[in-house]
Image: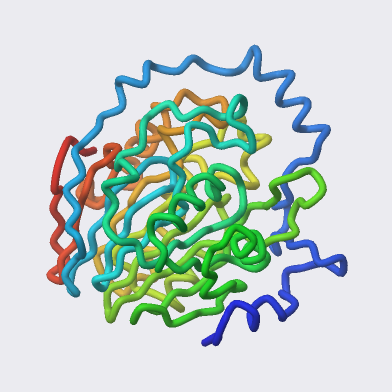
Length: 351
């Protein structure tokens, strides 16, 4: 569905909103836990939280991205968490960017960054587009957004329903504000908003008033899928049938423990690998890389911070998947995909 601007998208009532305008996960048993369970988790985690390794164990690489990728190339550099510089179709895109030291509304409390950003903000190439998956602080960071607006004045923002007002209030140029399955044509790219299983809210009184999502980005016949922040939902195959086949799928692997609390909103490694299997089954035989994200940067939940990639590799082996298709990148690492479907690491140590 082509939309002329964000106002057209936001004027429509989504099919997954209730009568009060709150957004919902449309699948059974996918509602996030409420305040009582939050308090239980906080109480219990003192005895269930497992120790973390020193941050120095996380490998780093020197970024090696070009000013712009060639038209037949996809270049990916991991900044950390779910933040990437994606270069596709000669367009430079930031995905869920955050450079701040904390994922929090305040500078003195909240989840602290344990690993420095893989790219220094001042070394970014000219940014054309910023894609946002939802409004949580580890994905939508006000300080970072203001820095982008100030430094990259021509950058345009694409976001799910309801997030555009927050962006415009801070001076951003919002090109599109989309519901699931809606698309926009931008910079000769086709960008589509895809289902995700999560929730939203930056304050206690605005929970679920904005939408959460993933994205597909198409440049000609080159396509990538950024799943956003999500639990394991049943739509990965349908997303691939409608919008693939994909050259790469960015899938979250961290912030899953304890499972009784996190399962509705965050995939564990076994679920992420299962989602990838769903994608590959509908990918028309095209080679698709799994790009691991949402780990190794902010301490959000109880699992040790080095556990997500280790468990992902275990599940990968169990599923007898090609080890070359699993990309567990170092912070700052750059990798590229060429039109012949080959891939190459550009710098640093990689998984």
